[in-house]
Picture 1 (cartoon, rainbow, N blue to C red):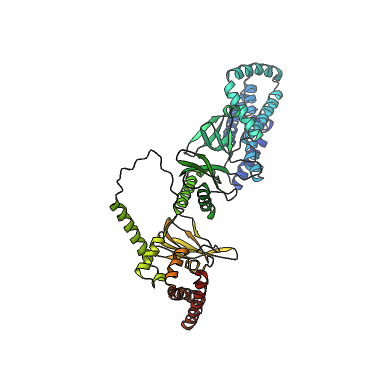
Picture 2: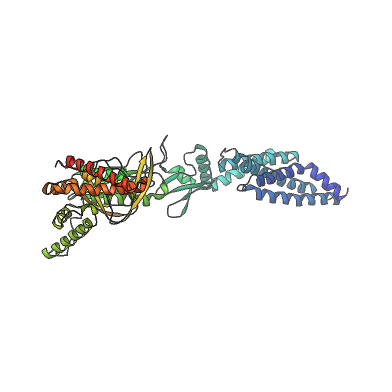
Amino acid sequence: MTFTDALLAEAKGSWLGWAFLTLVVTLLLGRALPGRAHRRLPASVWLFAVQLVLLVVVALLVTLGNDADDEARLAQRVILAMAWVGMGGALVFGVILPRTRFPVSRILQDLVVGAAAIAVIAAVLHNHGVALAGLFATSAVVTAVIGFSLQDTLGNTIGGLALQTDGSVRVGDWIKVGEVAGKVTEIRWRYTAIETRNWETVLLPNSTLMKGPVTVLGRRHGEPELWRRWVWFNVDFRYPPPDVIGAVEGALRAQPIDNVAASPQPNCILMDLHESYGRYAVRYWLKDLAVDDPTDSAVRTRVMYALRRADIPLSIPAHALFVTEESAERKESKSASDKQRRTDALHKVELFAPLEDAELERLADALHPAPFTKGEVLTRQGAEAHWLYLLITGEAAVRVAKDGIETEVARIGAGSFFGEMSLMTGEPRSATVVALSDVECYRLDAAAFRDLLERRPQLAEPIARLLAERRANLAAVTEGLDAEARRRKMESDSSDLFKKMKAFFKL
């Protein structure tokens, strides 16, 4: 028999054609349906190449009449069977199933491919007359010895299989095991990989997950993935808890905070009482578990600014020492500087141009600091709030809602004021103003302005005229009014605003 005849006979008898067809289909589909190549495909290709070499060796041995051809043929067909099963696994699990969106865990893939490989190899051995009963008996003894010496490894393997089967821990879950907390990225036979927020990957043995408690963060049956967080702060006990809780909850719920769930709403509770302060906590629900610390920081910022606006200081430890001597001269200097700053802010408001210096100074004493952090709402459209804001530093956006859609119509910066209609006439807010950065404001309440008008009621008319002029100028821009239409609108609005001011302040 010639070498060529022997080679063709061996190829036909070993189902080489079908294996080659499987390889071609896998490669073509993998190229036509792009995606990550299956991990078994490269090894299967190498095994296919190795069995081709062995096929040539078998044909050569048959041509030479060597007695070793049967052993070489068995080795070639066993390796071909392994390559064939590997290519089939790559075709099914790497090409077909991913397109059907039918997820199969990695361990289950390994089990299916492993079982198929054992079955095919057993069939090849049986066809070559190998006594499988004796082989299994020998392998049972070997398995017992290996199992006894590799108890931990087998425990990890069985643990990985259990995790994949029962779905108690899944890829993508955030879990906490002891001091380790992170996102599950992979469940292997031996270990589970967890990526922490510190940019670390921790490999936990599967047996550890099976033996000890595992906390799955943010998971609740029938609910979205949310994780409750706690932010703590202390306030002097002299300030009533309802005032503290109201100020904090109002700030947290007024405007959404990135990654904080709207439902359940954030809340503030008094957790404990100490010698000189109350211990409070803000509880909120985190939507993105990867950004816990930055979101905690944003919530703390809201809390701090809310308390400052309410003139509620955070508590100072009872053992704190102040070594700066607060002399009368120093107090007076600080007060004068602050008052001058307030008076200068009022001078920039054209609305108060008719006021005399003494009247401006009286209003300056009535101003309240009102800081806001980025993202907070300073005023909300439709709300009834009878005060005016003077913007000292920072920038804010003016937004108007119509038919449920909110649109930004302007941006204001230092030196601007808003809320004058609510202050002068009691009308609801006409727009929502949101801080685009940390802003510092002064707030002027209607009570202080009422006291001024009671002293000099004749101020109402020129102020009403200034308000009407400002409104007419805005209408001229937005509605395209000519000079005559603008003048008529200003006269009409001036009279109307004057009447509203008299009614609101009971002049």
